[in-house]
Image 1 (tube, rainbow, N blue to C red):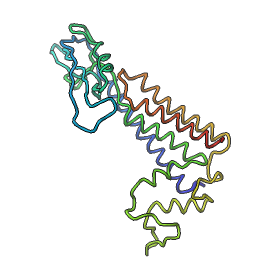
Image 2: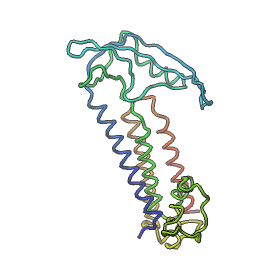
Image 3: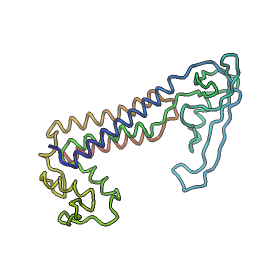
Image 4: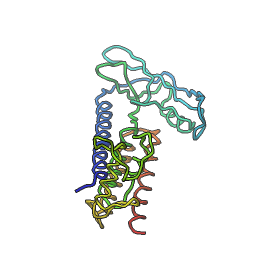
Length: 265
């Protein structure tokens, strides 16, 4: 039987996977339901602006490829300015914006995808957002491995950062309230862990549903599935790609490396 902490982790993992999948499929189905026609690029230029905020990696000056195009639907001419579906192509890296702009020369023909129910809504490049759908799926996969294998502490770390109680958490011997409910809701997780034979320093191997070499196999599958999510995104989405996809790939590799180190060292 799973301890309360592992049960919470498993439910959270399934919720993340379901949410990410629903959002990703919805975004993809909406984009692919658009009809296609031929349009003409009327103008293509680079705009830039400066964000007044905290300094960011790469600087606060952003570049925006500005493309205007016209297309006809049912003998009516429309003007479009959106390059990508569902997201803009603003970036603080000029070379990335230049690569996008290089695909659209003034006077050239382009494929325009428009909403059949609202022909004035159109885009040129099928570029998706990796956040939040892809990130939710990747987190769900990593948390799934965390919930089912031994000696993992990610959920404990997350719960320690959630301010469920304004007062400092006391030891397990702290009295409950009069109605038998702990003052701090997360303390029931500690009690469940203690009942399962877990110490404050880590999880009990006997509590994990998947152990030994199968734990390594499970983590490999979860890691590969998370990397596969990034790969699918890169395959179906036009550049410039969402940088959170690359960050997710790095986190996935580091996460599996952490598990392998703790398992074998």
